[in-house]
Image (cartoon, rainbow, N blue to C red; front, side):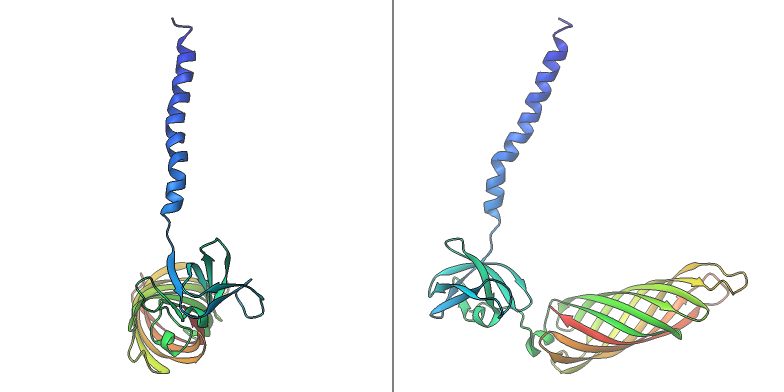
Length: 258
């Protein structure tokens, strides 16, 4: 009857909802189990586990030789691991260098030393300098394809006498001699600059313009994961006015690799 239709409709909605929720509940444990971590085996007499990522944290557990641990994640020179019995702790980079994989091969990872400086996954850093004659601060991040080639993005802000603004660019960086302590590099890319002229200028208006750049610089390894980086970029700003503009960028700063 017509009076029964609302009740049947409600029941059908409940059944449909249950048919969606029940499989999700049943599959959740399987999905959790499917997430596997890298397993390494202790090759030295024991592996010390600290309560935190630093030598100032006490040792609370020792994993015996031939036992395995799962590598959960890494924080600088420390690894968060979990034992076969579910004990979680932090192992130092020096200790993890003495572990092996299931096939007996050494556990290899990027080091916070000259070898890591030569070949690593990425970089981040902060700079101070000048952009078109104005004071300039910026930051960058890069992702390495190999020891010599990386994709790099940067953002910055300049404060000048006649205008302020922000910049953003994306490009490729080629490291010429990656194994050298002082290694030169070349850059090529594109970007945008947003300029806000000071109110003292007549008929001034904010503008956002595209630009292209070439440049180069030198990076110098300091210690651990840190290095100094200095660079120069020549920008060509593609304006909507009668002629394009040029702006030189000089900056120096500190960075780290990971």
